[in-house]
Length: 125
Image 1 (tube, one colour):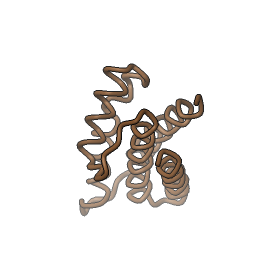
Image 2: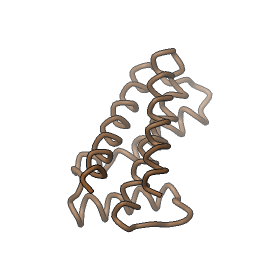
Image 3: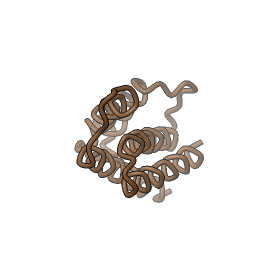
Image 4: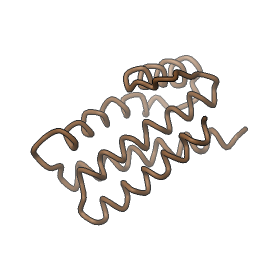
């Protein structure tokens, strides 16, 4: 499970990077969120925490509570990333206004940080 979701995260990250470079800012922001979200699922699975539905709120809360606060596996810097990124993703997907390049870039930076941190943690085993 963890390998499958980490693979999905990396694929979404690549699409987010391509989309940003080619001016598809809404698509970039949306895919960046999913890269971070799927990486979080991989991290949770790696530590034996699974939920078949992988609801957004459950993943956000459990990643923060279990892997940041209790086990201190990831930096507290990541605590707000998923929630903040979901808000931007919702704007990208459901608002009539397009995101700016700056907003999409910030979203991508957070996704890259999160995927890198989780990839590094998962490679230790």
